[in-house]
Image (cartoon, rainbow over all chains, first blue to last red; front, side):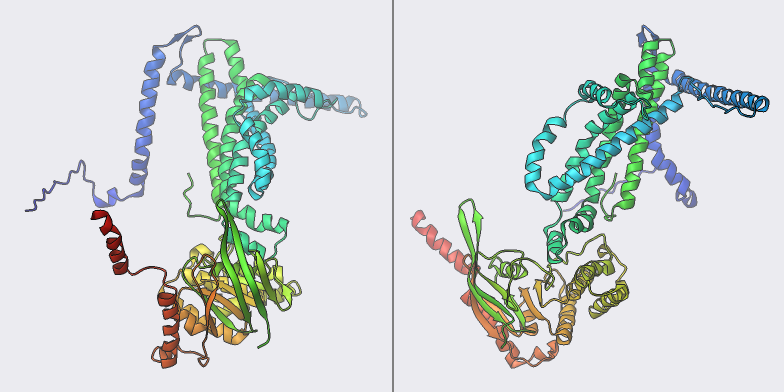
Length: 331
Length: 279
């Protein structure tokens, strides 16, 4: 004989139907678990911070970090006002001199105050973009070559495997010396620290794009390749019309991984190369060793994380936009 | 019959770790212009290999194929292929898929002519209404129609079809077979089609080429189908001659070239083999 035990449906809280179905409630529900996670983290962080004493004072908790982020913003604004005032004074002075002497050629000298935290963020973003761009410029074509030709893959694969695991810190001294030796100019367009950081980023974020592109290209369905053969597409058309579109999803997977790695590498590279970005900020605060330093570094840590996340989302959006395969799960 | 496409002593070997594997041997076939040929045989008998050799995607180890007096040694648009799984480029619309072929093969046309020609070919397969849809947005049958339009747009001397309707349901397949007969009647292309479907072969073909089982597969029998065209599947269903042809093909496939032993026979053999051990 069959017995079925009917379980009473358990409801914690019954809401009236229009309220339960409303969009904002759904949004609240989906935000609930992340919010709980975040709150728990803040509580844990606060308790842990209170129990850690360092030579630079107590480890900063959420409150100190918040205060320092406000501080950094105010310092940025103060610095901007200073710069504005500096340029205003210059203009006034120039105007006066031109009035006194019409032949005078007015000169504008750039403001040379220390970069603020927010300017350093821009420097970092710019540096990582350049490094990432150089890497992609090399990795995508080489990846396509590796994917198309088994011989090329066999020749290049050992090099990929050899250099892929190398830490940016190992590359940095070499890159520094090469940049110093090769980039000699009286009127340098870029600072050496910038080039060193960008190239180190490029060297380290080359590999995911290269490997994923190669895998994507070699995985193109044989039938599509046969279509190309029957149509007698030449090598360039084959790459442009069949290979590239077919492997776009994989190329973008690689690019996303590369940008993530590039951003991580950048912070280390800037620390050592003294490129005035977030890495240098962290290093300078550490060397500075004031009682606020740790909280300011913690602000940088959070900002670095947030920007990394933002960059990843940006790549994801781009990938969604260019990928023809809307059915694949992109996350 | 004028020689249009000629296969002479075609054989092919594939290298394997255990030494060369002879897939095909001594395939001889002469096909006239405008003929509709079906290749039928069990899985793995080398039907696709024959087609790929004609397409130029495989190179025969011995013998070769000659089309209009020219040896086939590479793929080309004059031997357009309709692949089993349509193989449209998934990032291009139906129109753009045909356009790619037209741009490549009809270089003598100007822009407006090309546009006309693309639309004409889509019209032939009744796909004009969905010309701006991506392959992912249309059904399997529709994709195969676009695949056929793309092949036709290359104005091929021979149309090669590798189980073009194999992946479709029976109703869609019947529909596409009718379309194909219509197109063949209108354009008079030479067609070589691989099929597993006996009805399809008899209904569509002028000749059915039946292949023996591999390895070392070759042509077993060739059956001439002298049914009047246009053919109507409903009228033919009761036709004596039609059913005779069906019987011929079925008897070739399931008696002369039987691949799978009937279950009962297999069992009794196993029992016979098992008895001495038990005793």
